[in-house]
Image 1 (spheres, helix red, strand yellow):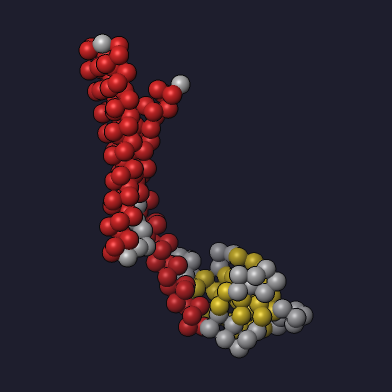
Image 2 (image 1 turned 90 degrees about the vertical axis):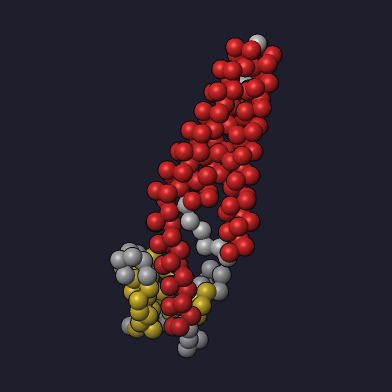
Length: 173
């Protein structure tokens, strides 16, 4: 059972390591070097080495023919896991980078509109005029806020199809 878990690690850890390297992140230059490249490379190589060493050890116990077969299997599993991680990471990259860009654009929009988040449940946001707002609906076309303490009053943030915030209505009836 432990042997199978380690054999699985020989494929899974390289998958996650290589996928993490190529899927796109919002990090500084040093964050990219340390976290993305070195961290994920360590995960990938560590999985391959642990799996390979364990499989090779098992091969030594069971004889030279088994050693060659198990070592080849460990290398193949690590390479297949790495290749699968590369393909998956590259497939995720475009949408992740687009999502990161939309998040940055929305942060700039909220800053320019003077809307800020409180982190609370009753009053989730304040606008530039000091109006207390509670986010009550998140849709594909707009965010709906209830003006706290003002019956029947709402505020809206219109969204583009990409998810970018494009306008803030202020408090309306």
